[in-house]
Image (cartoon, rainbow, N blue to C red; front, side, top):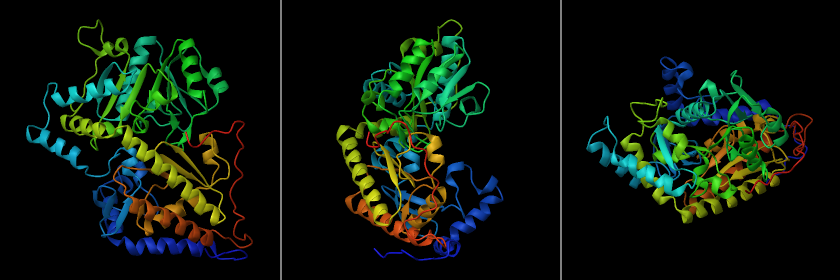
Length: 452
């Protein structure tokens, strides 16, 4: 790898070269984005799918491979933000969905595919006795919030800084009924747990906040505090179900009152679900006095539940173990390549979900992640796209069972080349290679393992 020590390459001009390369590869995507701006606010309909200078328009996907409007090919490390655990257009799931659709799109009645998926979920997850389907993880979180309010008579929820339980205001920071605490800080949770809290919503790892693993014993402590204060403990396994047959709760020894589900349980189609204790879910059942009404025209869509059942059936312990080993290898390779380029970098990981951070200290909270260098992440994202690796602007990676050895080898090579190029473009006048203008990270009091 070529050394850039002592170099004074102009940062802006060098970064512009990445943009030039990207624009040269994606002219049709640029035109489609301009067209979209006429009918969609900002040219997109989902916040995470946009980035500078404009997003690539994906035309089709098959397994671990994507093709954009310009005909460029990519290895997929996004998998629609963890929802495609077997990759795009997974044959068995697609065939199951099509078979259902041929018999009718949807009905105003229960469907056998709903029963099959619910039976699978209650068999896989020990704490899930009953299941109620929704159309998304956001809707599932809202239903769980209503169930907690009904069960406790309270109306506030506690969430963690950097967490994501959907886009409903009632579960987002800043809403008057939402209390926020830093992740991995049990003392802060203790202070925040007043008698107004109906439920604590937690993830097994801080997903959108940077794939930050929970400190040993942290979530068990949160669960115990919630129950001691008369609140419910709600575990969001929308992303993490892929990491264990019984979800991350099985590995962590947790017994949540309610579990939020989504993503992979729809096999690539829209879905969400709340599972949990029988007495809580029966609050929505016919015949329950003053029951909690919950409806939705497309709840538990037959095509989604059929595709989801096949997806789960094929995500067995062996498949999960293979994903885990691939993620371990990839994390080590990325870290090694960054070190060879002289760049401070940490890869956090939870199962087959990873996140790259330009810092030399493993982050333990969302605040720590926000202190890392996002300019370098933007450069890394562009450099990878230009090499045919489709990943996220925030450094998130998640793997699918469709990835082959040659795909992972290409990904490892692309990261190594990207770091080499970023090491050149990131050198500012007066900053020799290896002396990066990265904000000093906050050193956590307790170091958290990144190989949970």
